[in-house]
Amino acid sequence: VEPISLGLALAGVLTGYISYPRLYCLFAECCSQKRSLSREALQKDLDSKLFGQHLAKKVILNAVSGFISNPKPKKPLTLSLHGWTGTGKNFVSKIIAENIYEGGLNSDYVHLFVATLHFPHISNITLYKDQLQSWIRGNVSACARSIFIFDEMDKMHAGLIDAIKPYLDYYDNLDGVSYQKAIFIFLSNAGAERITDVALDFWRNGKQREEIKLRDMEPALSVSAFNNKNSGFWHSSLIDRNLIDYFVPFLPLEYKHLKMCIRVEMRARGYEVDEDIVSRVAEEMTFFPKEERVFSDKGCKTVFTKLDYYYDD
Ligand SMILES: Nc1ncnc2c1ncn2[C@@H]1O[C@H](COP(=O)(O)OP(=O)(O)OP(=O)(O)O)[C@@H](O)[C@H]1O
Image: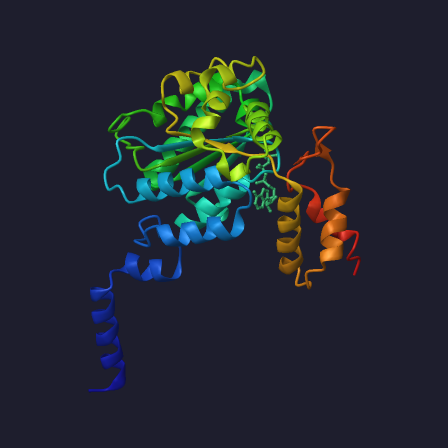
């Protein structure tokens, strides 16, 4: 038998055995890829990368791994992440996306919306509603396990929030499309003050922040906390319709957490960790309240640019 026909025969067998999609998915990201989420890998990521957020870690790990391992969820997973700026809300969304899809936030199946960027003009609300609804419907039709991240929810028009409400509800399908395997993550500063009050109360009473339990945060994340007329959540029936599965509080970060962020950034840039520089950068940050100066005004944001000053190579 000459080599060419043998080669063709082998190719025929191979493609017959490994169907094209599975072969393609060995080299490219696929919606249907069977690489199901590993609870251990997600836990390792959260434990090693996320600082100062023991409550968020616990909720996110159980909620996401539980949802992904459920073959027939009754509704999409809806997480609402609340907290001070720079405390890791976007960062956690990135970790979740990276544990579900190789491409992470760049995956074709992960969609990030920033309210002030994507929906800036209130006069266009009707257009935004139509665009957003067809975008969600189209992407979930293409991939049931689509992930939608909405940042700055507190700046999103309540009418627009309500436009996505049907997709979050307990429907088997809407116009033939099932949203039950999708994941919606809402990020917001709403409730940040109340969360901080609880954290400060623990600190003033000499308690460890790790002693804070989720139930200590419930008043901060109750419906009343969102009856702030400036919050996008206000008027939105997302909350009173119980469409949010988990409210996830992000605690304000302390000096020691900033130092952790700075060390990570030093290593990421290939530098040796210089504790003198770590301390100096952290000390350049501003803290609140005025008297005790416990929590960073900007969380871990801006520490990275401050590092540039010390390494002007
Ligand atoms: N808790 C944290 N642990 C580790 N790194 C963090 C944490 N919080 C913030 N960072 C670092 O700071 C960067 C900015 O944080 P991130 O964008 O997650 O803040 P945010 O809470 O979403 O803020 P905002 O409400 O202003 O959008 C992250 O990419 C990460 O590098």
